[in-house]
Image 1 (cartoon, rainbow, N blue to C red):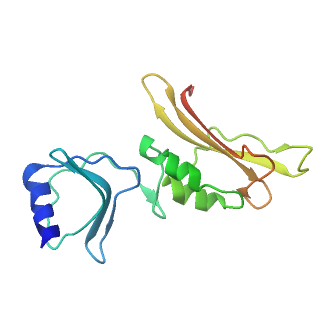
Image 2 (image 1 turned 30 degrees about the vertical axis):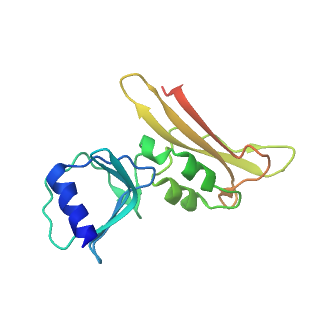
Image 3 (image 1 turned 135 degrees about the horizontal axis):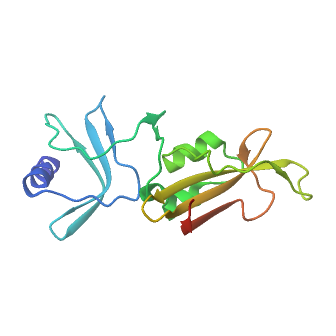
Length: 167
């Protein structure tokens, strides 16, 4: 009953969402899961709502998903929680799943061989850009070229840069 009341409040009063994780809707169970919502001056975290009947009132822009991963990244994809989950040995697909978006092949670098590893290392780059200013954010992760797993050749196997020039 409490979730039904919360759902009524959300739609009657309106709500804003500020999420650190991707909001998801499971069509099999009709459950909408949100990282956080704000109702009035109260913030609720990790909210799950079962929608028995609903009408979509509005939808903003969208980006196609590939296996549940968006083709483009937004700032919501570059959170400290997601960054901290990326670990040595993960596959390229696992990193994309964690971030919720695909890497940007326009910024990929050629493989480089480091004397410490003697393995070719290739960098994959995820980008969020503001087209008007060409300033944005990028996450660079080092992968072993042969199997595309996150390389542990040094402690800096991932870096995030904010407000960088992207042209």
